[in-house]
Image (cartoon, rainbow, N blue to C red; front, side, top):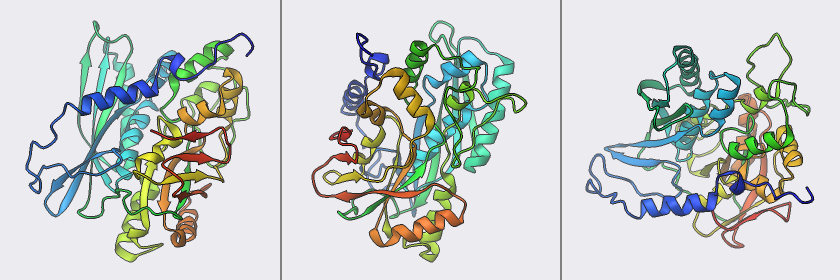
Length: 375
């Protein structure tokens, strides 16, 4: 890396800090109190911001919206579109899970410079598969042809969920000593692909050739484009985002109805580890901190990306999920019963990865180079 500019997310085209400032500027101009508090349709305030919550009588509705991002550019380069809707679905429904909601419906939005029936057929097939995995109804969608605005196909969506009133996971009941349970990711998921593409350009790696690392991992399945040929780097990098509806919805239901494997109140918060990496934990509580002393094993593609791009440990943990796609904050006494339940239901590779502390509002790590003091 001598003489080369440090490779990071910002100089790859995405400045997370600037993005955060822009979002805050937008939010500060909004008036969210259109409907009077307590009435159907009024907003229910809560920290975290993984999704919005709306009053709906004895129940609550939850909504969120997200897209696939520049991962779509790799799909376009390879002409492989079927996994893209799974990413789109996952990025939405996983955020609903973070406040304890069960996803129930989804709508998609596709913007394209020119409609292509073959591409849209692949997207439709993938969307049907995604809806089945997430157990949601496809309630509609929109396709817009925008040749003067977009150069590449873009896909986003909005998901709707519900939960009993009073059961929203706000993080406010988190206390020092609570434990963090990590659930493995299926790969890079749908964040950090501007950096991924820059590293691909620097390395000269061929997406259609075998990956320059051993991609096998017992805790994930890689979606194949062609099972008759060898696994390719493109298949590893495009592996779709894991949808966590199973196990999280059954876990919520069991805890609410039967207090098994624990009381619902002992699930304190859930963080979707997306853009910003481990700093997403800071969204759960305004003052407490988190220490990761037993991180889940990193997936092999992350090691290759870091080496090929000369990316720092901090930047990797700030940009990617590094093998943990979802993190659950639970009471100390419920951690082992939840882990046992997860294993019994076939969710492999989960572990207690750290704990909550009162040493300041920051995320610290067994690697001293990794520390986040803001999201």
